[in-house]
Image 1 (spheres, rainbow, N blue to C red):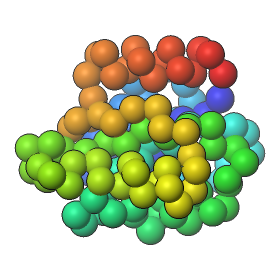
Image 2: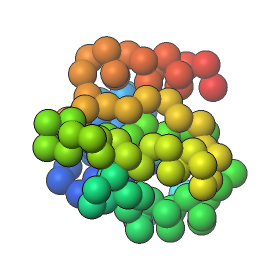
Image 3: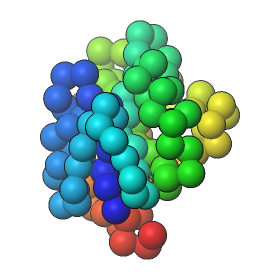
Length: 115
């Protein structure tokens, strides 16, 4: 299982790498099932890089985690989550705040263990 991240500041990349599985950017070629660690663009929108990745690999994505900042973005915190579910039908694993916590890591690892 691969962990694919779309990270603008490096926070999502660090979370992806903390899960203990191979990790790579959405910009790299993908040939195996994955979960996606994504982010929000603007006021809770889906980043274009995430949209492109999902359209290119719809059958390989087993779920997604959305990384946001509840302090900085308040009411638009993880606003891309319902949009991704509605538009692409992906399984939502978890929203994480500012790179996640140890509980977030454990929850995502538990999801991965069940796949």
